[in-house]
Amino acid sequence: MPLQTLEPQRLYRQIAEQLRALMSEGEFKPGSRLPAERDLAKQLGVSRPSVREALIALEVEGWVEVRTGSGVFVLDRSTPGRIQTRSKVPDNEWGPLELIRARRAIEGEIAALAAAHAKRKHLDAMRDGVELMREDTERGIVPLTGDRTFHIAIAEASGNAVLVDIVNRFWDARRGPLFERLSDYFESAPSWRTAIAEHEGVIEAIRAHDVAGARAAMHNHLDKSHSRFNASWRKANPTELSFPPAERTRRQP
Image 1 (tube, rainbow, N blue to C red):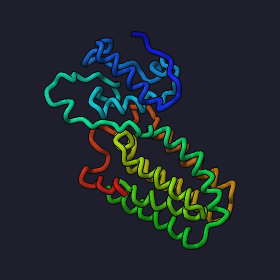
Image 2 (image 1 turned 135 degrees about the vertical axis):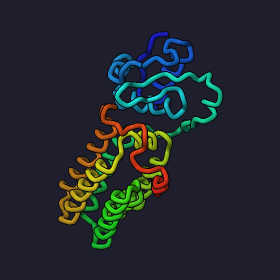
Image 3 (image 1 turned 90 degrees about the horizontal axis):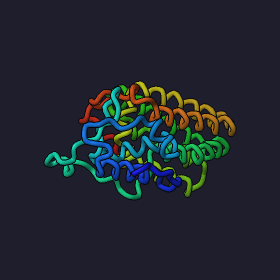
């Protein structure tokens, strides 16, 4: 069964379905390594980020195993209990990398509005969020509570309740299994320290009422966030979680 060019509609699910069918039909056998992301992207006529989202979905559902530094390998689903121990990705879950690109488009404009309208209370809330991020990172806790506080404070500074609701929905989407698993590979204390520095640039532009600067700073932050999640697998964390499992309850802000 040849790979088919796809149309961009919930793209990662279409890619995953094609790969799942090939594995079921034995074209990719248990234990074999899948083609590299760039090769799959070329054959399917899609972007590498979309392929990465599909591979993460297949890993969450127990079809493949990502071995950092080695590649993505097909699992033997005939092993007793393997299917039952895996999660099901909800049909309506957004792709993590696609979500970040949507956030760039919308939160860039939100930051620009915040620069025009922010009051002291909003700036204080942004700083509180960044400080909580810093404290949690140094304690080995995934700092999503402070991160959410920071981004919601910017939305509230825009003065638009609809935008606040949209940003809240973005953050709710981070709790899905795809984003959680991708975070396991590419989020670490050093990456969060880098993100904190990017946040500080956003705050400085908003504090200065620099509309264009705030938009650019938010774009810069989300562009770099996208790059971190789309880095080579060789740069991924080891199999062990980068933050201790007992501390990951803060993932639910």
